[in-house]
Length: 120
Image 1 (tube, rainbow, N blue to C red):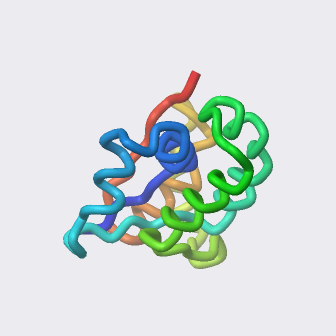
Image 2 (image 1 turned 45 degrees about the horizontal axis):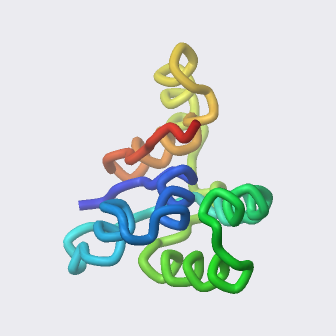
């Protein structure tokens, strides 16, 4: 099974490393392929200071957690998404959350599930 993971899932795993999200990411036993678009690593780094504050961890702990999580992810270039998948995804997300368009496009292209969560 292939699951597209959005940035909030990875952020949640860093903030709560003993929670269910990191448990699933680390214990899928090769039954689940967790896929992320490459830009989410940059997005997470962009919000690094907020994540560190929310998690109440050091910079070193943040880097260690992120690196551990990345080892359980397949990172794909956004360029692998064709225009048809992107157009379908845009239609599906335009009334929900346009920020999810690329994730939905990956889901369509890879015939995968999409795992998301909202962080307030």
